[in-house]
Length: 109
Image 1 (cartoon, rainbow, N blue to C red):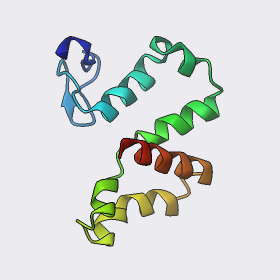
Image 2: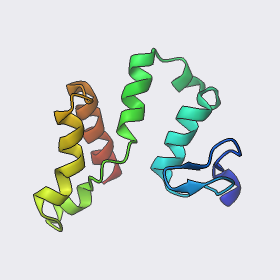
Image 3: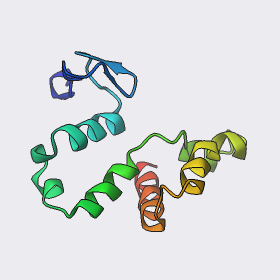
Image 4: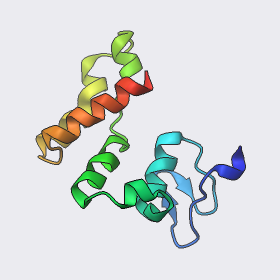
């Protein structure tokens, strides 16, 4: 299945911790990479209005939030919500994007 993994392009030094020429094996990061770099590869996504594309990209950003840790009480709230709270407090997350983010995590469970 490695043949299906996107590879960080030569014109980028790195992408979310993956170096040039390295395959991206994290499914959320791989999808984010394709959404950002090659949106035309997903015509149903590319045809959406920009606001809706941005909402979908928001659901795949890494905010150090792990729904599994929450439902299994494996992490203290501070560690679980720190980055998420910073994004929301900075006004970078419309409520509709936050709702879609949690639907994404619910689907991942």
